[in-house]
Image (cartoon, rainbow, N blue to C red; front, side):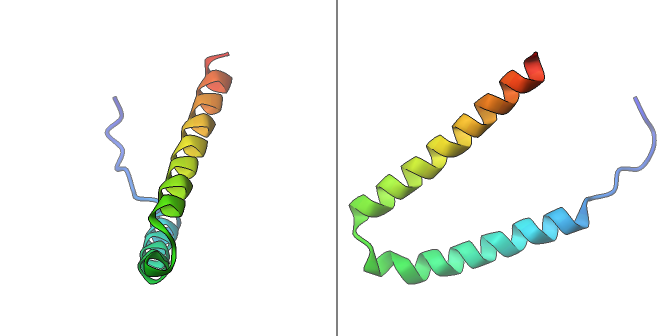
Length: 63
């Protein structure tokens, strides 16, 4: 176990935070104009895509 201090990765944190803020703003603006079915399909597709990416990465790391 290392006793060295662990510093946060500020650039990554700021980019993720900015993405969350922008996504939250755009989602709130677009939500009244999109049908519920379209939103559900879009979110389902995004969740599936992320899951597949994680699965592919895990197989690459496993080999």
